[in-house]
Amino acid sequence: MSVEVNLPVRPQRESTGRFLKNHMRDYGMLLSLIAIVLFFQYMTDGTLLQPLNLTNLVLQNSYIVIMALGMLLVIVAGHIDLSVGSIVAFVGALAAILMVRFHVDFVSTTILCLLAGGAIGAVQGFWVAYLRIPSFIVTLAGMLVFRGLCLILLAGQSVGPFPVEFQRLSSGFIPDVFGPGKFHLTSLLLCGLVAFGLVAMNLATRMRRQRFNIEQEPLPLFIVKNLGLAAVLVYVGQLMASYKGLPNVLIIMSLLIALYGFVTRNTVVGRRIYALGGNEKAAKLSGIDTRRLSFYTFVNMGVLAALAGLIFAARLNTATPKAGVSFELDVIAACFIGGASATGGVGRVTGAVIGAFIMGVMNNGMSILGIGIDWQQVIKGMVLLAAVTIDVYNKNKA
Image (cartoon, rainbow, N blue to C red):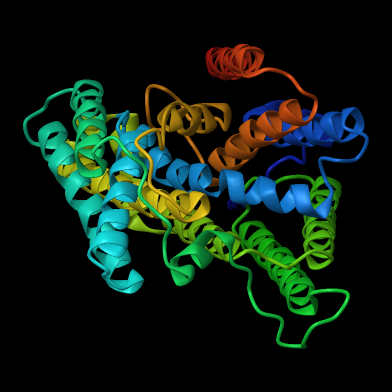
């Protein structure tokens, strides 16, 4: 009598080329960002990656990246938020009224403004999640309402300047614990430690996936990707260390990216948001409170839009009625360019961040080249349409 033993079958190894072809959604935008950076670096005769311009690039796009993190969750859940630009303007106006006219300290003002952003998100989320009004309509109304409230608060005029402590939120840099010198050694060391930590974390994840026979990228691609990641981080750190070091807002942005990356990949809430966007009825039947989950995504979006409003106001050093105009378009475009699906259920934090920087590098590079704002809008629209078209093509092909 023979006994048949079924041994676990290890997944067949894929070639690097085939793996890249099958995972083009994950790698396509990263390769596009690299190509765009190299193109503008060449066309601007090296101006794009000059330390001063690189710092300005981070400062100019920090609030877009921060809002893209919240917008990603909203889009993954199957909704949209058109009001974020108006919330940025309204929160900036509220901060100006509190600090400039009523002389409230910047810590209390920051807390009150974040609470106001959460309350705005809660109101809009209630209409969407519990009253079942389409998010497009609710947030379109919010865009008009909060733009109008911003005009009322400011009486149609700019209000400023802000206290120096508040300005450091956007224009400040981390201190150098090693003292003044040619290089900002603290920033350089911090970038090196982050690079080492990310490579170590990726290696641990690979070994864990290997232990459970889960499909993963070929070893040559893994090595090249991680060495490239470490090299880019150290190079960026070296460039910024040769100027003033790492901006405060970059630290805030990096911590938020790490937090939301962890939440979307490793928590029950993150998985439930993807389940909600993928199939709301199935998610509801599996026991997920879909209404409450949708509600929380809008609350989260409101808080992040408020934070972006504070950062933007601190950068301008004034609150203006024109603040945040078309920000919602840049934020939504960043998510879609980064691979988020318009139908929900698909999208990654890293993709949204890459999409935001694609938009930022294009804006910065075209401005350096002297391309007018009219043609910038045309080019950005074509890039957005091309990105969504490629995404739909890959989805239908799969």
